[in-house]
Image 1 (cartoon, rainbow, N blue to C red):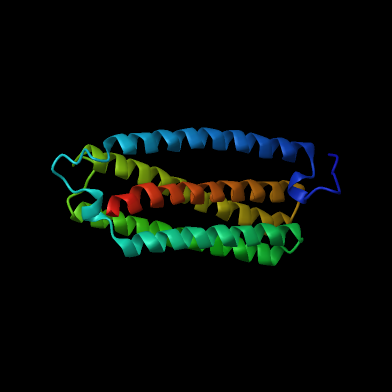
Image 2: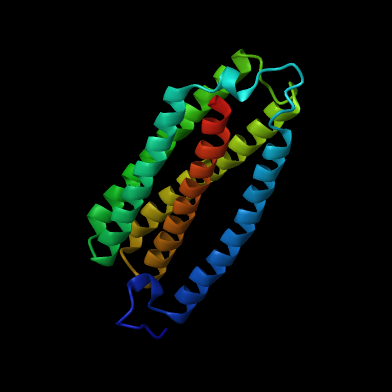
Length: 198
């Protein structure tokens, strides 16, 4: 395996560069998935069928907390990648662990939101609005849950193998995935929650 000493470790082999390019293509498919969900949401947002609307069930504090948690986690994953590029394994692992902890708390708050929505009479069966709301938020939440498992496996591999071209490539690709989830959440925050609370 030929290693390019001038490139960051995650880009240092041809296979690593191909992996990153392939992951960008995968993210294109994810953009199409979430684009479809957002289009469906915009179509069904006013189809409440006598059930609650966003203004009835959305709460400011949990939404702001979720947003802060994901934005901070995006910052910490960036610090982790920076530490990785400096060859500092322990700080990199620490920043990745903090990122996963923030993601776990985010999921806890989102589950709390779902319980509140159900208590307020918003379920999958209540209306077109609640069905697409649960589908959109649930799809994002499942992506975060998958990210927590994936990130934990990457930390495990780095602890076992160290910072190699392979492990750094996996960690960098994971960081792209995590940033993507944060970007999706910004759209959810802006066009679902903020607009829905008005």
